Length: 265
Image: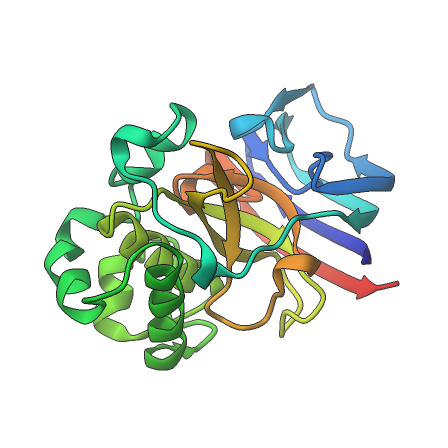
């Protein structure tokens, strides 16, 4: 599957500020980058740094006034997608070091608060079956409602409101998976069927890899039903949305433009 992406955004500042940007398609084995072009407004300072887990990159800029970003890419998806229900859960002592941090609470995902809930709601399930049950529960119980949440909305808030946007759905899946002792992380991405077109967010869970003794595999999960695992183009991963925002500013900014177009070729 080949996917074409065109994204752009612009923001303004009233004084010089530092901003951390993460918008570019990640060049990683599961998605082959066929072409890529990025345009940035000239800035006093611009530095590219590796993103979390070396999946994608971030860009530090010193912005003053209007700052514009344009990004175009063509990607061939080469991801191994495994039926979730066939995957078993790794016991914590069996896990390699890297995914362990995704068992713990984070800013938007307070998993400890949901341990009793997952034990009751998803009783009798484990591993990939538990993740599938979580995905189905969020998809059924939540209403996709743009404008119903904001940058301060946590998974606990979404659980009460039962509505939100893609980041809220992803936070809920991540939280309930962690409460089930399954490592889960937040994925910023692009996907062709997102409506309205925008940056997208999904969850990713770490389960036993049947082809690797003692190893694991990360599998994508989208409770909004707008993105298929074999059509998702990763930008970056993190503990939650705070780690992979397309724009994190250290000072006041006004986001004045944003446009995303994702197409199957």
